[in-house]
Image 1: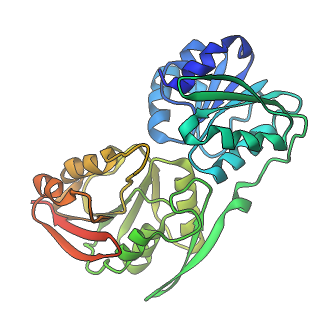
Image 2: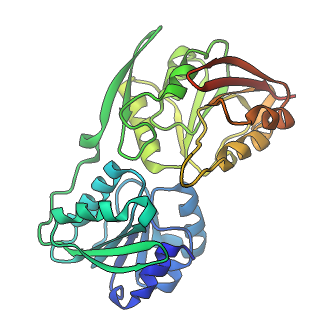
Length: 332
């Protein structure tokens, strides 16, 4: 059981009504709170929750349409996303309780100050290195329009400007990260056919590839619903057509790919997570055509070449700059 869920269950008597759990972990919390429903924007968590609890969990960037008596937000990493989610929930909870739960090292005390926009927050519990806060919404805001919160910027590429649309919570929100910037300079001779942008974020690489190779069938994949929505908005802003998939890792990708291009997810700090990247290397061959190519950017200090060669074949470094490397390998 996630420690945040354990803190919720320590106060279970507060949550007997029609409760919405937003951003909930994929544990047994819904099983312990039979009147609760879940709202998830993580495709993997949603898949696991749906397998156990069916229609009690919704996936997407907006909450379920049905009314609820209270809501709990599990604090996300992004402050901008927290602000959108809190305002979205508070707009539906006039004179009703809104709860916020999160880890101390995740910034819960700072985030709790965001509750002051809706009333007087109070801390209900502190345990398992987590805190639970509550506010009765006396000042219900208007529901925020997600598109109005989008940040737009333009990339000047050799074949013309490319407009990028980014949403709160999406990787490198509102700017081009250095890794993707380097990979954009190394997209020559990408094999034609069905091409996957794995971990697409705001759709920068996938959109650039589709415009550069219009005859190719682009597929964009990300685990996060806000990234999927941002990618669709980026494609639309540039009048491009591509398939966009929400899935938890490479197993959700189609087969018979000519190429996989990626700035794969890597989190450094409190939680260091290589799993998505390592799984990508291990299983890429099953999704690539013979001689299909994997091309990606990674921090130079990561020991990826040996992993790539074990799964695919010889790994070539195309360029190294600004602490990043571009790798290319073909399926044996």
